Image 1: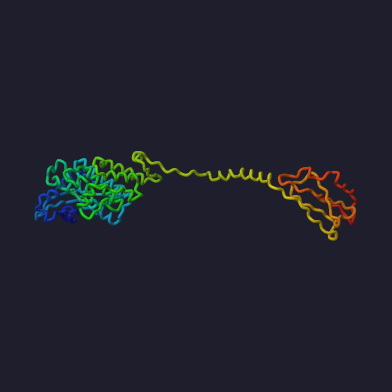
Image 2 (image 1 turned 180 degrees about the horizontal axis):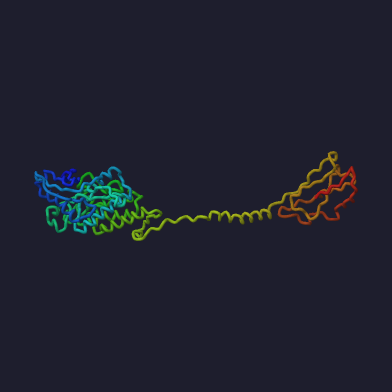
Length: 408
């Protein structure tokens, strides 16, 4: 319906935006009323999230104009087309700021009725969190309580707004809407920012209006599973067909701030229960440290017990005599390797006939013994009787030809 130019206010040298109604609509009283209606609504609200209007009037050809604050940034629609899905924190900040603007708007009895990404401007502002402020534009079809009355803008049966973002009651007629209509439109905008597309799309405006009235929107988490549970529940409530079940803008501001705090606080997690909307989430439990040595310490007595059991019940190695060298090699020497515990008495040594020591040599050799039991040490009954043992010859004096070797 109009064009916007960048202009210079000559006395001050200030750059402003000049909004001019097209000449085709100058003769339309409804169009002219809507055009100046924006200036009246903005002056009533006085919020930093609204575009300031400093002057209005008519050009020499009769076209009405508004002198507005010049904004340098991009529209939310352009941001959405450029990025597709917005990050959760960025989308929440924008939704929180828009809800704050509309909260002030509703407090003055004004309903915007045309909330959409194309009517939101994003400009740099270091005074707000995130360094970016959302500005709400175009109050041309806003419903002002007590100021417009039964004007042609609110006649029953006339649906005013953008079909993609209109509430169900707004689709049925402009006269029946209240502040909950803006809540629904903001829910559609928030859904689109997070999912990358609005909840309803159709080839015609009539089909869109019918979907808003009859069809339930898809759950946001079914499209974007990573969406926090509180945010998904909030969006679903804002898109309720029953206007009485939708939250007001004050509640939307509070929940957006709550979720933003949880997302931006290190070491916290989002609780999926509704109780988390009023109670702070606790940090995830940390794993206990410093006890990795305890299991290994407990293995020491277990290993010791297993070793003792092995020593008690394991079979003992049998002793076998080592053959003695031949007579020609050296004097006869007897040796025995004892793998079992040392006996209390030294057994006698016996030699074969061909390896018998020379006369005068006293050498002890092990006497034949029955095999030891595999269940424990040999019992005394396995040893030969003392009477059957041959007596040892008396020791002889050492001589060069023979010597005595005692082997233990």
